[in-house]
Image 1 (cartoon, rainbow, N blue to C red):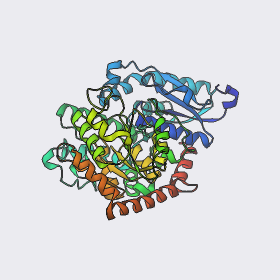
Image 2 (image 1 turned 180 degrees about the horizontal axis):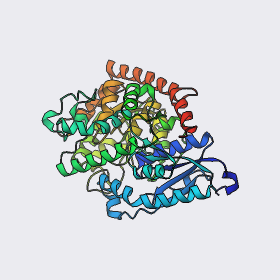
Image 3 (image 1 turned 90 degrees about the horizontal axis):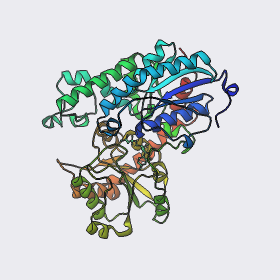
Image 4 (image 1 turned 135 degrees about the vertical axis):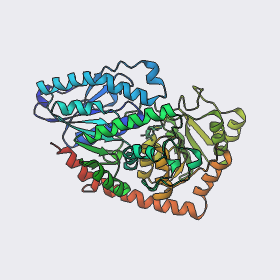
Length: 457
Ligand code: UDP
């Protein structure tokens, strides 16, 4: 039950607007928990599309639905740029009505500031026009935001749209990236639409009251400094946000978790199981799916694999061929969605074969689980570069044109056997330790979070 207005009157309130994709909802709700635990009241404004489950959120959070008028076909499509533009366009007026009302009444407490996902940029200017501080949340890395900032000049200099012939060219302006680490939007119309979206995102941040990033000084100190100097706005590196909240305190899964894999993990030997997941968005083709499955089978190691509906293009529910199922036997467990943080925490899990989504990478580091990287799109190639070549806490699956089972097996062997794997595991321990120092009391992320709690303009 929501508290009475008198409980909230006079309390500082933060209004949060998560973009309705799993990899964006999770960090925003973790930020909500972190701010709430430091005394702020929380309102979450969400579009009708993919609304969070009220029952899974703390009772005293206010949830407000914003009409988005987005056709279900667009919401279900892979055209994220068009969805994001529509969301910004359609929700600006309802957001203005909501905020104007909240400022008039103040029954729910004083709106201290608004935090909107960088992709949901329209509310930032609406809030500012109404005299409310508005901060943007970058749910991915600082390095990724530097790509956003550099995008026009990368286009101008011919790095973008990327061409395969340039894949191994160094991007001088953005070390340590090679061209292959940038967005692979090869189609010109899509490239232009994406460049336009990023221009809006960057403009939104430049006009905001500040930028919050789901990263820490220890992981990306230089990148954060560079953003500070380029946008001349306060920057708050308050992450990784899942480490800033009481353990597993937010349940924001859009899909139903299959928790039976935890029981199965209990039956496995310590440090033996590979966890395999490609996050909530990317799709792979049937060939890649089968090669991945054969690679896992040939590795002879136990695994838990998240095959969510829609992972394999054109198949709602993907089953492994019988021959493969026989070979794997009871060694592999396929689930449609896992309680990922709990899986990564489990003592049986030894490595994470991941698409390198930013949340997945940081969740893996916080549990000290080394990674086997198979990035597929957007920020994943860049994150894989940091994991494999900067922090050196993972190895990549080598792929020439098409993923092959031998490449999967070779990467697993590199990480699990021999000196290289040992060194990776040692470095992972160090990085994990450094990250927990940042997020512990008086660590840099903790201090940045307190600065945010006290924020006013
Ligand atoms: N996740 C989960 N269960 C799964 C797979 C993923 O709970 O079976 C969560 C994961 O913990 C992470 C988020 O979904 O917080 C995925 O975000 P990420 O940035 O890694 O990838 P994206 O989905 O944005 O590509």
